[in-house]
Image (cartoon, rainbow, N blue to C red; front, side):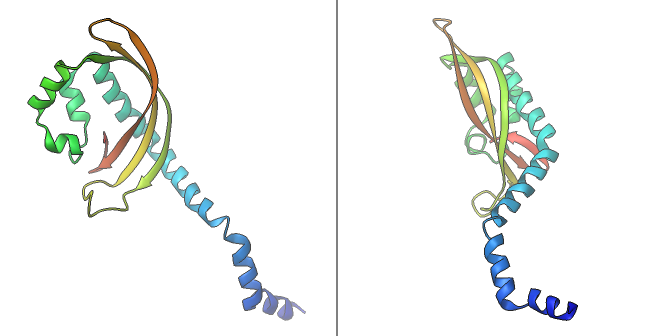
Amino acid sequence: MMANYTKRLLSPRYLSLLFLFLLPVLPGCEGARERIVLLGEKGAIEEAAGRYLEAEVKQDYRAVYESLGPSSVYRKSNTYDQYLAQARGAPGRLTGYKILRISRLTENHDRKSYPGIDRFVRVEVEVRFEQTDSKRQTEANYDYTFIKEGGKWYKG
């Protein structure tokens, strides 16, 4: 009796049906793996985002620049002195922030275009900007991309 049951469970027809039922669940397995990895990385991501945002609020230009990923497009095409001139001439500045959510952690699937980057993540932040001339405050939600390279998280 047990032999017949095992034989039926391993039959190609039964395995095909089982696969059809599991097919919609399989993409969720990847999402679950992502969430587990995100849980392990969350503290480091929050720390990197907080360091970057706090440097923006304090107008610590050196710390802002150093928070940018070494392989980010901006940092690769702008020296610190170029960044400093742009930052000092900006029409406004960040005066406050609150990190709302960290999500969409993904592996780098394009090593050819981004060879130094291991992972990407989305950091949703409520930010407050102040216009330099009018001192008018504006609040908005903003999504920042952070990247992991060389074992460390940076603003992308």
